[in-house]
Length: 436
Image (cartoon, rainbow, N blue to C red; front, side):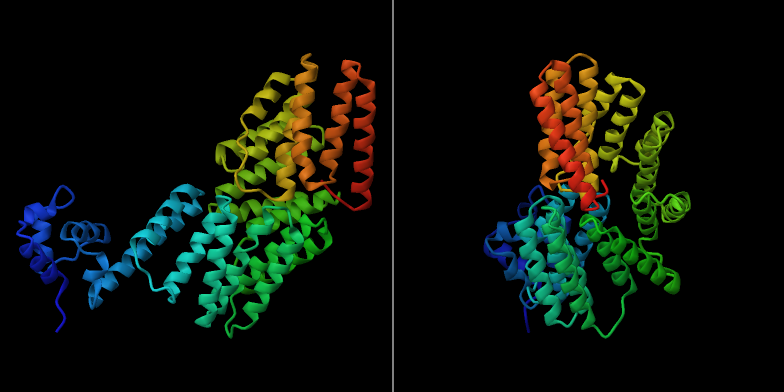
């Protein structure tokens, strides 16, 4: 018969001529040690590590042939993973990563098990948000292999989707689309159907195609995802899907159903208490109020966006800078730009351009306050960031704005060069159907 964990601890303690109080130290109590030795309580993993260190053994020594303890250990791992997942949902990525990292250090998980694949999948997803892309790719691919070995094709396909975050960070939407196709091939091996996966896949197809400036395909994918939601009554991502319908139609100058789609997005976001989407919707309304020449009304919606959630704040402060610039309140425009905290993980292309477009209004505001050279530096920095994406209407505007500031300084040669470059980019964007 195998020796119980409590008996092992008691035997080793006596061999070392150690009292229960001495073994407990500052981390535990004598009463806890007594209960463990009498097999009426089980130590947590943290306490087991303490005991193992005091008794000169490794934690694994106490786990041998201890099925009961193994089950408790698995429960601890799952509970900690649940805590990490909750923090991840709150976008507290550093805190989530810390818990996941501690799991890897403190627990010896069976590396062929589904539990280990679940751990790797969440760890890899967290790494993406922290821009640890190489590490993320390694963990996610390892998780996919384990899932496939267990014929868990839906889990493997879902993890495949997470791999999109790696090329996403480099605006490589062609590779993103390839990974999406690979994920769908894995999903097809499953004998079961997962409508949430299918909706997520179509949602990503819509976003990726938009990144490729193919809004027609993007709209088709969005409509297909919404059709599945209506048919199955699984309203996963419905708020985001209707938001996409509103924004992408607006980019194509089709405002016929803009308000209707935004209202539906708001209804679903309210029902699911999705504060991020609600904040984003208010920010979008503010953006298009600016576009229609109503910056005062735009500010109302943009400030409401900030009150709801600070997640979309970079986009919102950028649009606020534009609003205040349009109203001639240049100090507030500059102050809005100063409030922007640029994200670690690269956002979607349009979001990225929207955030960095703040430098346009900072530069123009500085020009109007007589700080021409500071305005030039702000615009040049914004242009440097925007040129990562190559041609866009936003980049063309930045160059034309730079030309305007150069003209104010009397540097007409640089002004002409910047204006020419802006017009060239505008023409390319027009020919390629680039919408932002």
